[in-house]
Image (tube, rainbow, N blue to C red; front, top):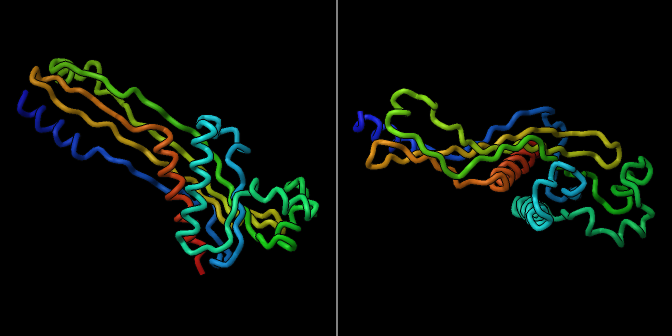
Length: 213
């Protein structure tokens, strides 16, 4: 029995991984050119991101902008960084249709990029099952998966219409290592912030690909 359990959980350790799935809510129906202006809406506007510290939120915003620039986009910026330009154009409420339209007509940003954070799941870093518990599956092997769900939406500034909308779920699996007594230590050193970063990267990259000309 010990030999079989050793082989089984060794395989688990090597197969543990991070996986991401993308679920299309609205397939992109516009042609997004690299010269089009894309304005990232600040993450703190979404209450879901309160799970992250202000520093982590700022890092994630920078990650999104860097992804777009790496993809060849030449005019991308965070909404909050255009405070002077927005004020000069008479824009202080992006939810107002007339003011929002100026973001395109005056500032040259035809699209908002909105990212929101949905359900997350954290886990303990460590758990243990004895050989007998594993044999009897009582208690069962612990479920220590970490996950995060985000939504990435591209929005026309002129109309306020969503033109691309996807939900992205990233999961970080746990893994087990057997000990000399036949028991197994279960580990997951991932974090919710890691899952969020991975989901965000996959989501933005997917949006760029889906909306490509």
